[in-house]
Length: 131
Image 1 (tube, rainbow, N blue to C red):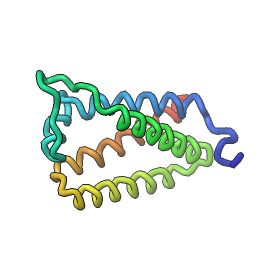
Image 2 (cartoon, rainbow, N blue to C red; image 1 turned 135 degrees about the vertical axis):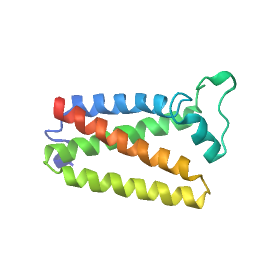
Image 3 (cartoon, helix red, strand yellow; image 1 turned 120 degrees about the horizontal axis):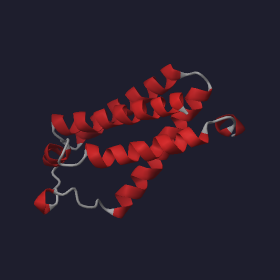
Image 4 (cartoon, one colour; image 1 turned 120 degrees about the vertical axis):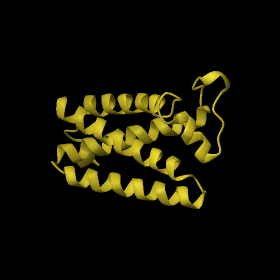
């Protein structure tokens, strides 16, 4: 266990997770991809054009997953394994796409979800590089 916690830049992990979580609010807002994504997954956006508040359980699970992804980026950064995190991100994106096909999401919705994974990883890698 010490190999995955030792020498990890925890500040960069936390900042990367927070920034990526915040990016999700914008990414899935009506200002960017939210409205058309919601149509593609069969969800309703709140009335009045606001992004509203997603269910608390979804926010908690997303926060945990975002932190774990940021930690994984931190571990790969510590080990100079950029290709490993790129492979992991592409793997997650393909699995999200497959799940979207099973649930009959639109192509736009699947691409939005895959793009968000890619965007989170890019943010996290940049934060690791800066901090």
